[in-house]
Length: 99
Image (cartoon, rainbow, N blue to C red; front, top):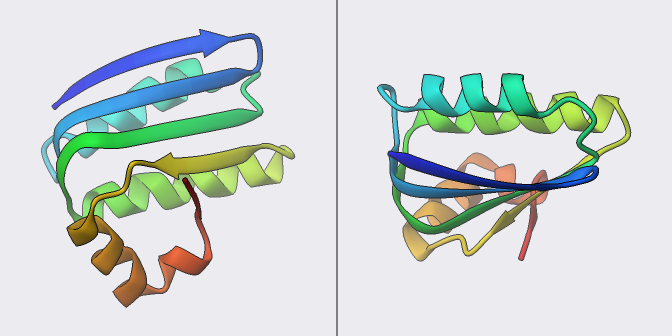
């Protein structure tokens, strides 16, 4: 997986390329732990992300809870049909904001 970040003041966008799975979820988690300080709006761009596993969902949910607790927000953008099906089946489509 490849991660590209853009940070402006209190907003950050992370573009994910490849698969967010058991092997790569810790990489995203480490990046977010390092860079999330002071961020109030996080956008995760899934336009080039082919697959998201349950390990990836755990990272997304933990990040969402962290941001919400500090008054921030998280948006999932460019969510593909397969990922949207997973979100719908788990009920997370009602939790996450999507563009």
